Length: 311
Image (cartoon, rainbow, N blue to C red; front, side, top):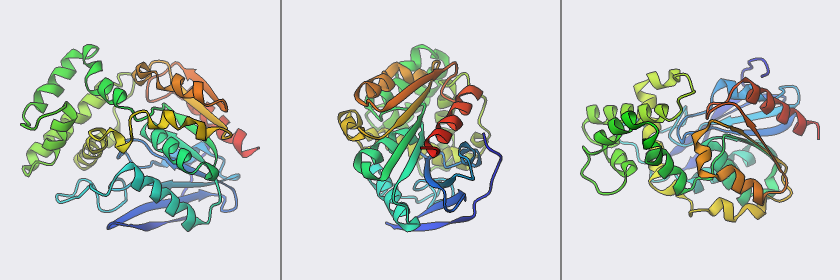
């Protein structure tokens, strides 16, 4: 990865609906624009994501999606309203950011949930995307959600039992996601906090090769993250099922790279192979890692961004 850098510009973009989206730009103001889309939903962008691009050749743009990171209002707020936080809203925010920055087209980089949003954006605005780099990708399908909240329970039975037992405190009908979403918005803040902790424990359990994330030590982060994940997952990421796969023909002509961990349990959904089969312009590589990646994958991410900067 390139050396740490600081933004040369940053601010909050008023995207309407009472939302102020945090953004920052790093590197060369006259360089090739590259947009970083973080995961989660609700993780927020990180300083290391700046380091995947040559700061001499790239104008690196990062932003925190609605209600997370430094964007306002924050999902951990007591009276937060997430009704205007959907995939469609986020795609509009990306376009608003592009126009505000005066960018004609940009390389789009997305990891995990960020890859889903990157693909949805690229299919909607293919003429604005010069290339795609997708890390530990998914397609936002319901089968992926069911895998991560139900299917992997057989692999991690003790952790899944703790996860499921707490969900039963909710009386709402539906899936474990529905029940946690209900508990995460309980008036009792102790219940909200414990639901967030249990949710994050489960997400950590199904990524057994990853070290504990320091961000999960923050109760505020856990609550915002769990609220946003369940908000999106209970609605199928606000996408029609298989929407991205069905729209893959719109990616034709966009060069792309998919980088996956062989030990990433998300692969059990089959999504990377299904997308690659419909997108002739993509290269897909696998690394001996889980969902968190490893040094070899990090090096390849940088190599991919270097290659696109040279074209």
